[in-house]
Length: 152
Image (cartoon, rainbow, N blue to C red; front, side):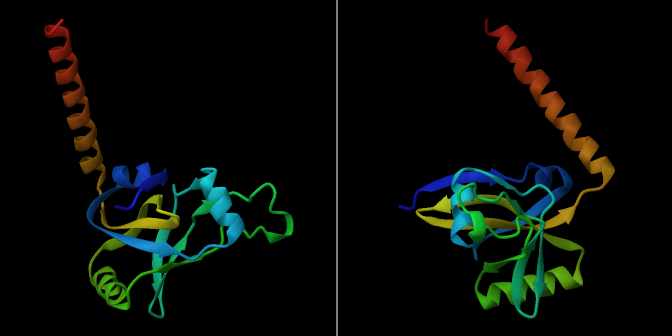
């Protein structure tokens, strides 16, 4: 069984989008980038994925430069290629082009020794959807608090 170690999560994706499906993709990195990810110095907050000429790329993902990397460090905001099967990429390309879906990175993790990116096929939330989610969370928190008080 493969061991998973989550490095970074995109919490903003859960707030701004309905996540319909998730896919696992490998990511093309250089050595100093992997070392920096191992230290947890990565940010997925404003990142998104794009499909160009049958390849899928992640944009806006920030990997801080590795301190001991000197000349081998790459641009922290560079566009990185994702590794997925051609069939999956073509299917996602068709869905994204036709309907109002986006490809958003959800989490970055190590699967054994390889870095993987979980990509979500997402549909944007409207403001009233966000308010509804906040109200639901608040109500659940209040209920849990009341049950906890009752059990004392």
